[in-house]
Image (cartoon, rainbow, N blue to C red; front, side, top):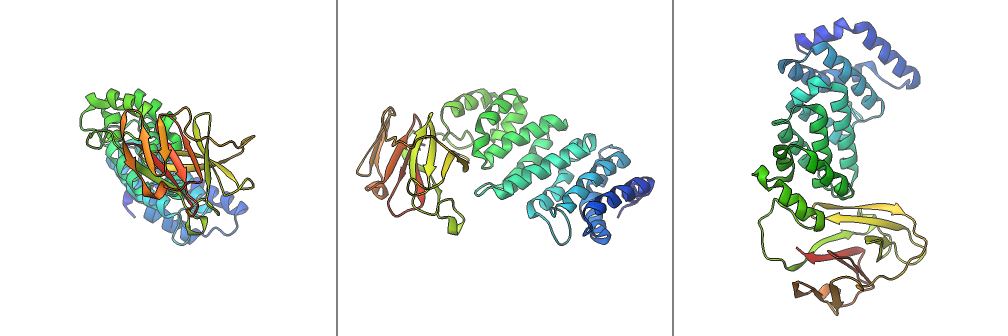
Length: 333
């Protein structure tokens, strides 16, 4: 423990002792020695980094102590019980020294919450999010602006249901910061990229451009016993233009499916009446494994020669097969 952090603890010793005593009143299992390890391993490096960037070590210590104590009490930060991604986030926040020094409690709480959600979402990429946020912090030290970029970055790291909000956030961010989130080398390209992504969920501006061709852009769902979603082969339909999936027969649970170039998420829901959607009203057709789309070339998908359900909107065709727990998604990617 450095002298900077030790002095900050000593200066606020009575307050910190009172906070820990209050927490242990409601959670008698809290261990002072274990929480001391949290302070040394997770809090001290952040205080030192923020102080080196010009922040007041005492104010930063105060903010971090309260958040660390709450996370420790919930088993997310500590030597024995912890959330590995929350713990990794606290280690990585030394790279957020500027924003951390300005708003220590806000930044650590938001980063911890984001990593908790990313870590619990199948297919999401928390390590990529950590790296991306540190990269954004290189050009932005205003806390709220950086955290808004983090919201958009979470979408890019697999939280597909954040898509509408993320596009709005990116449009309002400084162009250089939005370009960093999108993986674009030139901020001038941001408006065009956002325009394309608004109409095409499968457009990734960070990838090289190529002629549109029909391809399997994703395969989502899977058997619940292996970490997937469904207990039985699912069926798909559309409701208000959004893809929905049902687990097996009419008695199965129903999910709203959010999917795009960056990931897929499933959200439990209820609908009044399940109706077969097919491809009517969409530019897609599927006939014995051959998919066609207005404006794109045809393509054969032998795995879709026999399907149990099909649904399509303007950009995506979804299909299920008799012996699979997955949903095929086909688009002009």
